[in-house]
Amino acid sequence: MAAHDVSIGTGHRIVSLLQRWGVVEVRNGRPSMVLPCPEPVEPSPAVPSPQPHQIAAAPTPVDAPVPTPQPAVASSSSLLRLDLVHLGTVGRTVTTQADPHDFATLQRLLADAVRRAGGDRARIGEYELAVHLADQAEPLTTVVMAA
Image (cartoon, rainbow, N blue to C red; front, side):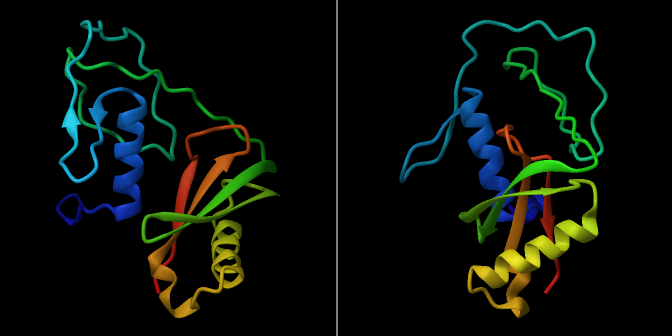
């Protein structure tokens, strides 16, 4: 994953999402396998513009299933589900009310979550905080901090 400059946790979330979409089959002890598309999918004529928290992806081949993104809209203070991820493994999940666009607050929440989990603040770079709207499966953003 270093070749693509993404963290291990982000890579795991990508593979998990591809698995939910039915694009890959994850097999223990063997490499993941890209699955054939059951039927060709026509590209959507109107593609919504990406949100600031979304990462632009390479164009989807015509023969691959096209996921339908559900835009998540958050008010200034929303009920959030926060997943504390340590080296790619979700350790704790908490729910709180905060502004998901206030990065300083999200950084404090990450530091507090690491402390509550018994983690070492000097190793905070090993942690990330996946920020979800409470009722959404996909994260709005992921917060990381340098050690």
